[in-house]
Structures are given as C-alpha cells and as structure tokens.
Length: 316
Image (tube, rainbow, N blue to C red):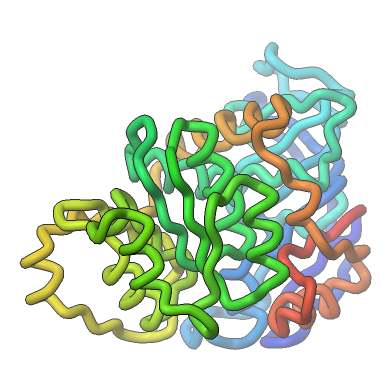
C-alpha cells in the first residue's frame, strides 16, 4: 500500500508499506479520507523540537471495512466507518480495534465524518456543561470553533456570540447559528458583549484560538462566576494570566480537553449522530481536498491558512 511518511519538517515521502495485519479484535479499513490536523501541521512545520523522524501520522480517518477479525461481530466487510486512531492514517489502509469505530450511513460523505476532531469539539462542549438558554461566546471560530458553535446550539444554549478576525468566517458562523458576530479589529467586543448582556458578560466564554490575545479577550467577556473554558491549543509558549482579576471574578476555569480513550469514542459517537441528524453541518467547513501524492501541498496550505481555508482533507 502507499503511505505518506513524514521524514523531516516540510517533507512527506510516499512509500510502499505492507498492508497492516489485524488481530482478532481489529478490522482492516480501506481509507477514503483523513483530515489534516493543526497539531500535525505543527509537526510538519518543525515546531516540535523533540520529535523523532521518520514518523507515520494521520488520525482523522474514515473508510470502508475490508476485513474483520475473528472476534468481531458488530461489523462486517463493506461497512462505512469513521475511526478513532492514534496515527498511520495517511495510507491506503489502517487497522483499528472495533470498539473505536462509528458505523456511518452509506450516503454519508466520509470526507466529512472526521471522528477525532468532532469528538474533541463535542467533549469541549460537554465539559462546559451548558444549561438551557445560557449565553455563550466563542472566541476563535476556525474549524473546531464552528463545530462547537453548532453543538452548543444543539445542546440548548441561548444567545451564541462568535468572535473572529475573518469576515467570511463570521458570515458562516451566523449561518450556522450565531446570534451575533464581532471582529475585534473593527469592534469593541467587550463593550458589545456587555451591551447584549445587561452589563454582566456571558455565562460561558470559550477561548478557541490558542493565543494570548484571545485568552485575554475571553476573560473580558465572561460574567462574574461564569465559566471560562480554555479550548485553544496553547503550544506557542507560556501564557500570562491576570490572576487578581480572574480570582475577583470567581471564574469557573475549564480545561476544554480530554485524554481518555472512552471519552474520545463517546464524543465521536455523539458528534457523528448529530451530523447524520443534520444538526451538525460539516460541508462548508471542509474547504480543501487533496490526493495523497499532494500531501505536502495540503500541509503547506493548512500552515498558510490562505483566504477561504478552514479545513483540509486527504482523499483516497
């Protein structure tokens, strides 16, 4: 089979690898799509100094089952599935435990059924524990933020505010359920949110961009004793927090991430059920598709975040 192996920063090499063998509890899946993850883009850019090359990555995979292990009763060859895997997804085939799968309807576009990032977004919303009609502000509305917006809406949130610096993203956020949208480059977001909430601030503020300035802005938007969820992937170095202000405001600080395998699988199942029920719209979020032999271009595009880019997927 063909597999894309990251040999050094900026350089995937397409290699011939043996098709994976499977254990009695695994299935062999013929890959149809694998999403390009922001964390893997940082590997490609060389931002992980301790990383040892070559490395076989790719974890947002979906496909069609080709073979099942002797102990597998829940699935059969021909089933369309999304999978939670820890790597080796940029290849023609992957092997996975049957418990890490979600069976898709045959009509569901598999390049949209990106189980792992959907799971992360769903679990971020679950950790916020939104109550009916509570107000939510999402600061940073990229791929993950736009999924979270829709999941918050599906779970009963009231007013949802979207904040981003890209006007086309804000237009999409409004189409997907945001009641109000603001660009911090052109608006006083903190004042606008106070005006909308009677001077109090929102019940839940979600920082979803992973930057110092978005962390600061989110803290300025949350009401006293409200929830401040840090969901953005803060890998750009240390962050500063005004603990005097945060303590005075008595924020409930929520880490938006989970690391337990069973929570990933639960979140994946919830999110894909929402997608197939048409309560989670993925089509406008997957903006770029690349064949495997163009994987370096896919990562270059994702790293550059060209106008109109939200999410790239490798298709097979």
